[in-house]
View: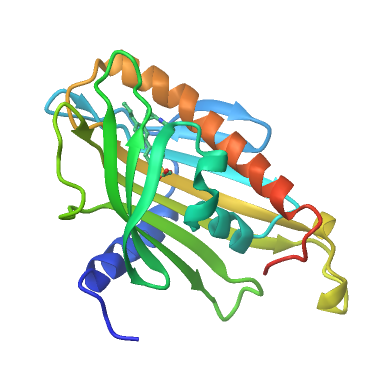
Amino acid sequence: KGKHRLANDVERVVQEHLTYVREEMCDGWDLIHEEGKMKVYRREVEENGIVVDPLKIFHSIQGVTGHEICHYFWEYQYRMEWETTLDSTKIIEALDQDTVIFFQMHKRVWPTAQRDSCFWSHIRCISNSEEDQPTWLVVNYTTPHPLAPIKPPQVRLIANVAMICETIINEPPLNPKDIKRENIQCKLAYVAFVNPGGWVPSAAVRNVAKREYPRFLRRFTSYVIEQTRDKPILF
Ligand SMILES: CCCc1ccc(-c2ccc(S(=O)(=O)CCO)cc2)cc1[C@H]1C[C@H]1c1ccccn1
């Protein structure tokens, strides 16, 4: 398995996310939304008058593994079943069996121009020797591509997003074969740095983000619970 042309970028961005997700949630982060186990934090940041607020969501989902969450988040074929904010999605290149490039048309968010996005999407399992369960993660990172030319009036999003998951097994039975879904939970951290890619009224994009991110995560996690309900556990 040779190294593809973006392998070094993928490595760098994955390591950055692994470092960043462990950072303390103290200075400068506002808890803007809480529902059940989901906690949504945001820092207010503007670059040249454009809202680029970093967003961090911590959530804990009963009955699914981190591998299952990442599998349904990364795999192309499920995307339109849980993503309500897209008009279309397609893979325009496969770099290796864990790294593909997506081109997506996002639904127009009034009053903004329609957004599109082109990003590499990488899935990875990181087995820590000490912990019993590995960490699974997916990173989506904007990249240019000849098959995704910028087509005004559409505006190209700049996204750097990570879904980082741990699997917890409560009261592990002696024989791992006996683990039931009620004994497992996934603790996830979702981090999003999204630059809408062009001027948007700050209040509008802050309100949309505050509403849409929790909604997207609620819908996505419910989808994974449904899809895995009576399937063997994917560790
Ligand atoms: C003016 C539009 C701004 C806008 C564009 C796009 C996105 C966005 C991009 C990527 C990803 S993902 O997690 O990588 C899943 C890929 O399909 C999720 C969201 C978010 C917003 C901000 C508005 C917020 C939002 C959050 C969640 C869903 C949709 N929109």
